[in-house]
Image (cartoon, rainbow, N blue to C red; front, side, top):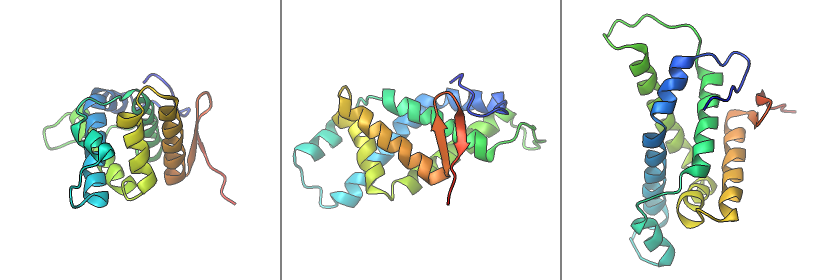
Amino acid sequence: MKRKFFPFDKNYLLEQAQLEMKAVLLNQLVHMVKEIYLLRYNPLGLMDASIEKIVETKEFNLEELSELYEEMCGVYRYKFSSNQLELLFDGRDHLEKYKDDWKAAFTNWIIEFSKSKNFLKAVLETAIFYPKDRQSQLAYSRLKNFISEQFGVKIYKYKGIVPMKIA
């Protein structure tokens, strides 16, 4: 996660907190998406081959989602963070506070994004159905476009985060 997404991307404590929580939050993402998908699109619990695969899969391919996670971290730092440390009076250090804030924001984003059937399907395709297939990369591209539309930014590999021009 050593990629700089914008010129003043220097909140190293927040970046460290996000990096330390990566594995936990990626698994949480897939579990939340599985649960929401099953509740919304299979409320009776009827089993077919695809639902069975969703329910029985316990190990997920998080490689493609890992890149998405890093981009979401960059968007969070771009939109919602400051390089200035605030005074904390509750006894926690800044790393703990950043972890709590990031986890809450990430969870809220997943809940909000899960209102879209396309987001749910793309996460399931990436993590469960086509983990080592070319379709996984296509699903990742759809997720990346979805994130760009949600936040009004475009994420480039070398330029970083650029605000989208809206006519």
